Image (cartoon, rainbow, N blue to C red; front, side, top):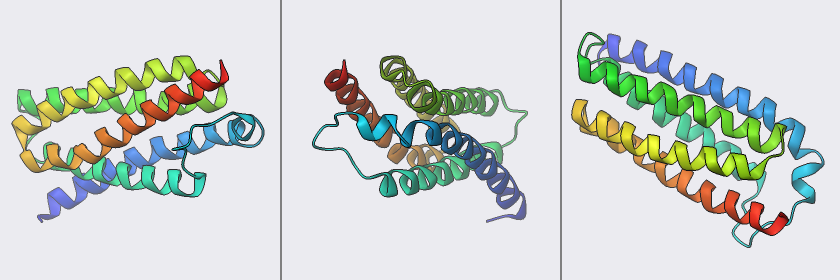
Length: 159
């Protein structure tokens, strides 16, 4: 790993973790009373597992973005890939706000569906630039797919 790649990946991981931290702040308002009172599906996972998995996903995302960024931001495909990445990161953070802070599971579900589609598009662009970077986003896509199922069931059970 080159020094430039290490610096760019570290910076990208930092940005992703900032979004994760903002999600934690948004989550605090909903997890105290609202979320525990909801009816949840059989495949619900404990909060002490949910948060660490997100942290791992943010680290993978940051490494992937760093790899793509390291190919040179002057390149059209790199810019396109990173713009998609930035937008999906915004939708990612917005989900926590919608679901926990605003307590709007249906709007959060719509956000997750858009996020999943954008992740797939981002993977496509990352693959054009670097296949390893695209593969690093695959667990994230699967995790968001699980989050869609969980969010849907919570919405359905509590509507």
